[in-house]
Image 1 (cartoon, helix red, strand yellow):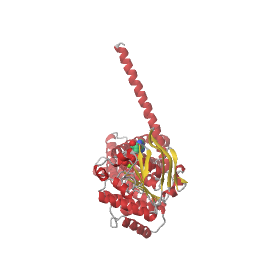
Image 2 (spheres, chains in turn blue, green; image 1 turned 180 degrees about the vertical axis):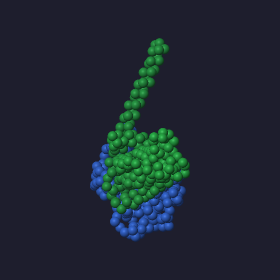
Image 3 (cartoon, protein in one colour; image 1 turned 90 degrees about the vertical axis):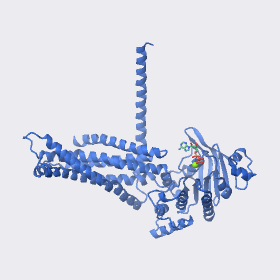
Image 4 (cartoon, helix red, strand yellow; image 1 turned 45 degrees about the horizontal axis):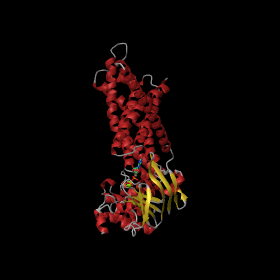
Length: 248
Length: 272
Ligand SMILES: Nc1ncnc2c1ncn2[C@@H]1O[C@H](COP(=O)(O)OP(=O)(O)OP(=O)(O)O)[C@@H](O)[C@H]1O
Ligand SMILES: [Mg+2]
């Protein structure tokens, strides 16, 4: 479980996150939703330590992450996988090398053991035959799937996904959502997902946290989100024609 | 206010704004130097995985070193030919033996042409490619991806480049010195300015091993400057593709200026 307690983050005096307290449970997909610019990425970067919080604490299973230095964080980072908004594949390496990279860094397995694990992860994301392609030769959806394969290579206990299906067609987006959900259930991972895709929310939103103007505005699940008791959330949800029609 | 007062007032204003500008540029210089030193303190650490480090090192020696040999060879041969032709052209007194051509060529190539000029060329070639490579990794979040995995990205990305250049640039410079002097020999063969015999006598005249040592020290310092300053320019980028282009230009400009500056400092330290 990951707990964020009273997180505050400012950029040049402008408050982006304002006293946010949140728990993320293992085995569930924990969604963070909100408008563009509401601070979802900043929140996720604070959680994984790419940005330091100004105030507040972050705990990983009761280990106080936010006060550790880089060296103390290292063991914890091996349990953590992250899927970046743009994939962030290493473009000097092919797909196999990308997925193998964390294994090279943290395991002392033989080459054949590593290759076996890589193949397993690639099979998992339906890319069994893409091992020799370079990142520049992949489509957007394939990039995301390779990034997922790399993120799960070390069997993480915590998985962070920043807009896993933005810029993808609805079918591929659904595929990726389901993939993340399956992995989460299968390995009891604590999964945190940033999204502003309503379809993802309804499909895999075990826990939904709505961020508005830097504050945690609403918490719920995919089942009770369609009857929000909150004007801002309602406005956010029913801003598209599709969702408005669905509501009727 | 008379026109003259107004004129003086304007002048004062310009003076003050200039002063303020210089002040801020200087502060920025201190700030940049500070963050450069901080970055270097993260770079110059023992790598986590030695086998991976050596793999990267070999890779970088290929990229930084071997791939530069062509351009170094061409420039060196032509430089050697031009230096000897110019020297021979300037010797018109019968009192000065023609073997002086060889001597002058050797001294100027070892002391200045190879270590400094070739390093400047490498600053242009290697510096811009390092800055844009690391800058692209920054804007596409590849550096963040490394950090999330718990890898010291500065050490992982920059150290192999610095070590590769520090190890391999001396080889390049020795190679360049050899080819430059060979260029002078070609001139002797194909013109009647001086004979090959004169030239070789001059090359061997009053040779001091220390000059070679001085050349290599300079090369190593320049190699460190080029790679580390360019990597710093790429690493500190915040923003998009536009910044990447700008940083690779800045990398070349800054490392060239530093080469010129350290050339003076090292010459003063070592040769006086
Ligand atoms: N490094 C930074 N420096 C200054 N301001 C920043 C920085 N990073 C983010 N911000 C600001 O923080 C706010 C939140 O940005 P963030 O990237 O978290 O939005 P988001 O919710 O992820 O949006 P999107 O859905 O478009 O990805 C924005 O207003 C942005 O300008
Ligand atoms: Mg974002």
